[in-house]
Image 1 (cartoon, rainbow, N blue to C red):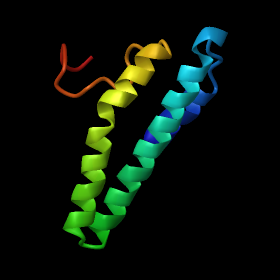
Image 2: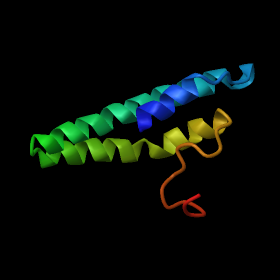
Image 3: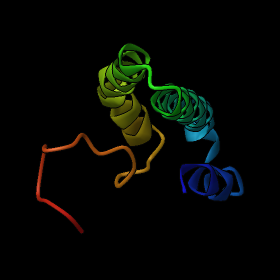
Length: 88
């Protein structure tokens, strides 16, 4: 699911003034996806510490991704969990 979302975002053409923030946001999303995959692999290998480490890395970078999304003009992307109005 996340990889499909990144692919859809990559197809967009951001305004020039937001292009750098947009590119940084996409890179941060890709890194988070990589960590999620590492967590999945750790879970499949019955490695609870590896899973916990991967989850912690994803969580610790969530605020940064949300800030990058805002700078890129993506108001609904990478919203910090529990910080707001609930599901949309």
